[in-house]
Image 1 (spheres, rainbow over the protein chains, first blue to last red):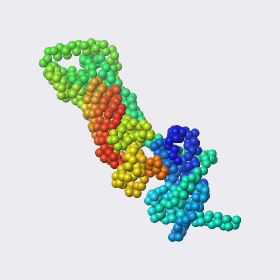
Image 2 (spheres, rainbow over the protein chains, first blue to last red; image 1 turned 45 degrees about the vertical axis):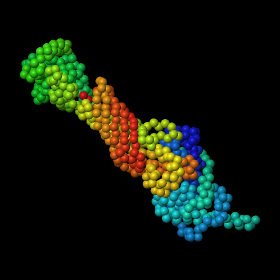
Image 3 (cartoon, each protein chain N blue to C red; image 1 turned 90 degrees about the horizontal axis):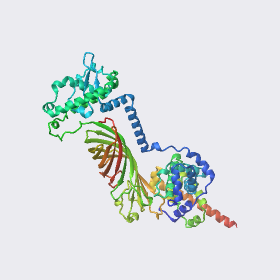
Image 4 (tube, chains in turn red, cyan; image 1 turned 30 degrees about the vertical axis):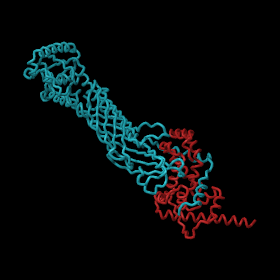
Length: 191
Length: 445
């Protein structure tokens, strides 16, 4: 999402700086799909995603005067949403550690094929099913491309914990993919 | 474990998820907008503006309070009055005294010992305005001392004696004209504040030390000032525009267009030592944004890590190129300077100043923006902690203008040279700009 060259968007942002409610509505409508996509990856359910989204948009409208047009507006929104999601996670501190044996984790050769065949929403549901501590590390590392060091600083954990949680998240997702594969095989066999 | 194809697939699929907008989502969010607080008073400019307004209101209340108005009237009347009639005790003669027409005339008179003033005499002044009462003090004193303390130079010069005689005739005529206006006895204590009295007496002593002996005898004394030494306190708001001229940092980016200079608002207070020198101090606040547009080699991260500039707290893990760095600094400056003023024509003066600028960095943020073709979306930030530092030496040349007795204005061209980099930066700024301000004089001449 690279919107900074849009003159229309620039006008909307400038009006938002003046607290124009119509412009605020337009901006919300314009950015909602992108912002909700970001928030959904960090949330366990649509309600939680909506909560993060509302908090994030509130920050957007409070600090819109600080936005500089030399930056990608999409990047700016994304950063606010990610930080809001991290704050949300840290406030709740929902640690539900599961003891997983990650020594058997290895990527299967056909995982890529299975993933390619899945719809975005299916993968999102898989990620949302992850425990919060795994999900946030997985999303920050894989999607937002944070390093383990950055994740550790943001979440207040050690780098080792971050790496461990990522591995566990991958393992759980792998299991989910395997179950999908198995169920599709069995369905195929029934036919 | 590094990023694999599977990670990339996860990323692509997850980023592709974008649910459609619904009105219900807006209805759920819209009520929260009403909770947004007013940010203005959280801003430094708000504090400065508030302080300015409060300061001006306090000053106005202080100086335009009824008692102060009396002081003001007394001052203006002594400058404009044509003559003073003096009524002495019933057992003394009804005496007309030569007029003192202005402060300069007063300064020519010999020093008066405040102890020699007769309170009894003051209590019988009729219809004399406050400052006129003071004039009377001088005259009475002169009548008692003139017979034996007339300056020798006057006595020695026939031409001067003639002139004095003519002036006395003229003043007598003026006194007759003004005679009818000066009725109605008022107690001088009701109209003259002690503060005003003390100030006046002090100025008399100063004037005694700067009498024009040499000029009377025909030798111009160019080393002496025309006016007595004068201590004053000036206070007022100022606005400052500064622009980096170091060639590296910019306060604008090509794609953003115009942003000619940083703007700061603040307050200034000056201790005016005499007509020539004053010491000033101020506080100005401002949020500056500047950019470092980086060269191509820098963008493609071929520079060795140690060469990277403006990266507080970053280490060698830095693995992607940058297009530019934006640095946002929220700060307070405390400029302190010594100013030399030379009057040119009437109220117009030329001034030169030099000083230092201590600096409080309230917040400094670095925004690292990747090139547009970068796979990395968004940008990274680093924040420098709060800090005090001595940042600049400054010099300036400008003009000042005395608008009225209590108000003056000034416009200075300034040059600031950094002593050290600001906060987490590695660049030493050189700034040029203008300062415009208005001063209120607490103790005008």
